[in-house]
Amino acid sequence: MDKGKNVVCGQREHADRSKIRILLCDINVESCQEILTLLSKCSYQVAAVWSAREVFDTLYSEGPRAHIILAEVNLLMANDAFILRHIVREKQLQRIPVIILTTPDQVSVTVKGLKLGAADYLVKPLQGDELSNLWMYLKK
Image (cartoon, helix red, strand yellow):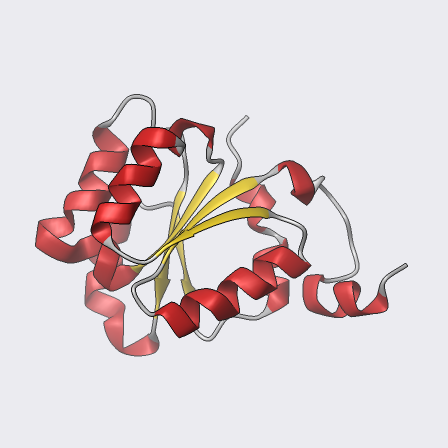
């Protein structure tokens, strides 16, 4: 057993995370790389994007195949939450849970995102244990 993997992702295995596809959207390339590394250590399949244009390109090309969308709050909520509103209204995408990546000083915009349909939020900096249980957001 890979002890390093268990430290990052917790001890219990409840899902085959290697079959779960996550779309990671973060405008901060360094933050995105850190989260991508943690998700990879947890064995998730990850596509990472850094701009609104890339979010839409990926949603149109691969979006319906994603199981979870992790999106940085400023990117997700820009232009009156255009990206989030699109995801929750688009028939092929609305089944995908959107989890907001936020910071402690972004409470009001995060709450607005939850009211608009985001499934939950995670506060940066993230830890492996928080990410290991993302599979629980999958809709049956």
